[in-house]
Amino acid sequence: MFRRHKKNLLWLLLLVAIVVAVGTAFTAANTFDAHAGNQLGYGSQAVSPVNVSYMDYTLDTTATLVDTVTFRTDGDLTLGAPQEHGYVNFDIGGGPGTAVDCGTGTYNVGGNYTQFVCDVTSLADAARTVHDITHTNVAVANGN
Image (tube, rainbow, N blue to C red; front, side, top):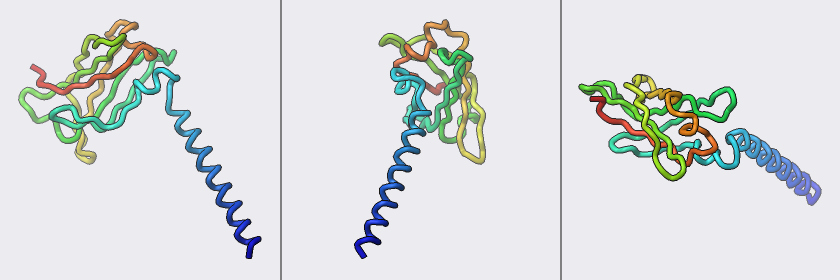
């Protein structure tokens, strides 16, 4: 009986080691570098009066500059007159940079969200350098 428990314990320890290794590999693949990993990561955030539930960044070919920011808000924000626009800017060196107008979003009926895709390449390179970004700010407002 003791031998059976010992064997089960070994299998359990092996399983735990595998889970830890896989989890570590997954989170390690989810960062850009030690400084920028926290600034470009995103969870869910209330942006009055909407909830931003998804955010994604596309980097340039050197992986040092942000080219686009895509974010989703819950619900349909395409029905207003005038329609709602998304806006993105980055905090660099403690202060907010210039905001980019993302235009109107696209409503996804099945997912019940509005997606905004923001091309930030019009910003100077210094204003979109991954390593220097301390925060990403998004807003949704009337486009007039």
